[in-house]
Length: 188
Length: 97
Image (cartoon, each protein chain N blue to C red):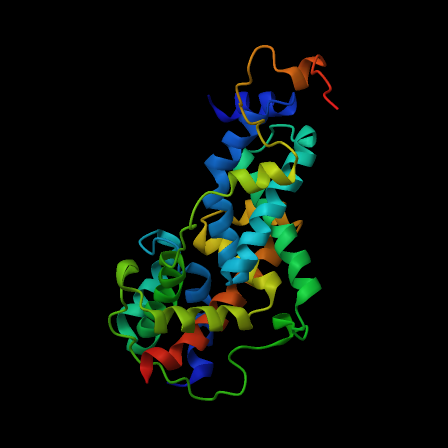
């Protein structure tokens, strides 16, 4: 059964149909949640919250966007809410930060070969997690949606209720910030 | 390298790092990258940053369908086959006191 039929069936109370939708999208939701929270337990909580919210709000799903896009929006909201509830992260605005400021000379060393997917080791994963966790969550979401999940700038803007220039600005700053954070690891 | 001389390019690199630099709009940047090893290294490191995050994925350790449906009180009822005329169900259980 395709998504549209499953959604219609779930809207009319077909429990199996909703279960089928959960089954189809749970890995996508979990993976996206993890990429934002960088914590497996939190990702699991967000996963469950997301489908509960999705079920409760299913009647409001008009079908104008893809079901997956609608789910991404719920995940994003849940991640933001969880972050605000649990995090004591100081509010840092990268908008006010010039990432090149204070450096007359820019040392650019070659990173050499980076390991591929299959061999991403624990140490490197920890470095990647630590770097992205330093990034304010609003920027993290833009980076993950645009560069990791492959949404267009317009889609990210629509989903986060941001203008296209605002998305671009956050994306650029997130990219530069992460690159600078990883630089030390790859050039030590 | 002197940052001030290259800042314009570094910002452009950041903006265009996910694009195909063979397009005509990227001509100037492409030319600069071919002549400037520092900017080329910067471009390469920025590109690798994105690829590393893209490659880093996690798998779930098992489905959460049951837990989610249970939380929504949607758990499928257990299919227990009872005897056709079970006394507890039909109210004809003889009280023996």
